[in-house]
Length: 418
Ligand code: SF4
Image (cartoon, rainbow, N blue to C red; front, side, top):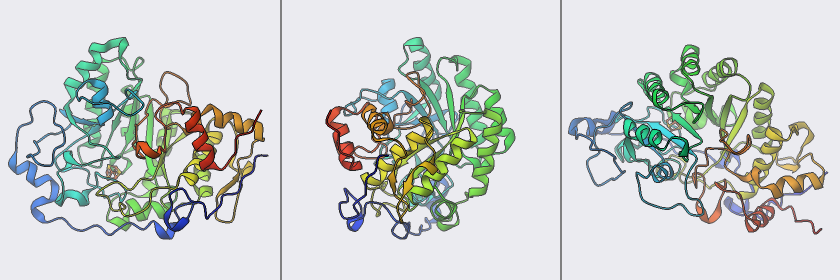
């Protein structure tokens, strides 16, 4: 068996020399109440500036009044790939997943502590100008987006499209409209569609409707690995409406309706859970027939957790590798060994086999819904969504030999000489 010992004094990045983010440390700030004149997108609605084509986030201009389904937001990487924005991504030319985020001046009505889109930012920044997973999200007319993808036809760089819902009274209905408008022009067999859902406003019927309209994969952003962390970061702890129970209810509906390998959950690593807890959840999802998509916690600027440390790379790499083994290599969490603080100390595979998995590098790439290359290679590569390029957490491209040497140092698993 492969075996390594995490050394608590040799942290890459953690607070006070820790090689993991413990629960006690990862306490979000309490949200402040925005003044009345800034609530519910009032500034944007009162000014009522008509949008003109693409809107690039800019805190110095009056944000136009844009709403889904006519408008959607997309990541900077997607906008560059579509040719809507100029720019280049470090070490990767484009993204293979077109993430379309619903948008409203009122913004998301939830207050998740790690999220740049959260409601408590109303006083500081209009919704369409807020950073989300470390980047700006330009707002683009939906029809213009569909036109470009339809024009590219089989030559489209996109392997998948994903509609990302937010917590808003119009979100369920507008997701249906965006899906319908997309599938009227673009064959979902050519570019499959995923739904990143918002369970809080959804019913089982909503899940069924999206499947019947051609959605391929349905995911639930649990984000927190335990009910306590869920409540602290996106429930009552931050005056946010989400509950663990409702998220699991919709996740189980998705399992019934979309079926095996067609549903999954997002999990953020490093918000205070132990590695054992996170990997127990990964195993639970696999046993149910689904997948986990993982994100490394990064203190998003302007969020209620922006004062907290990013997940140390050693914790992240251990969980990333173990999750890959459970999701794609049939290793079970009960074959792994953990220390007293719940850290992985044995991945449950013979050394040679573990070496091959590490050297293949796929385990360390961004995880998400599959594209056209392989089941275990995500279409959704989210370049630098959970780290700066100088210290990559999820690789949006195949890690090079020197990346793999760095990953091994982070894992403290030395390369064997052959
Ligand atoms: S529901 Fe989603 S978009 Fe809204 S604050 Fe929470 S994580 Fe952010």
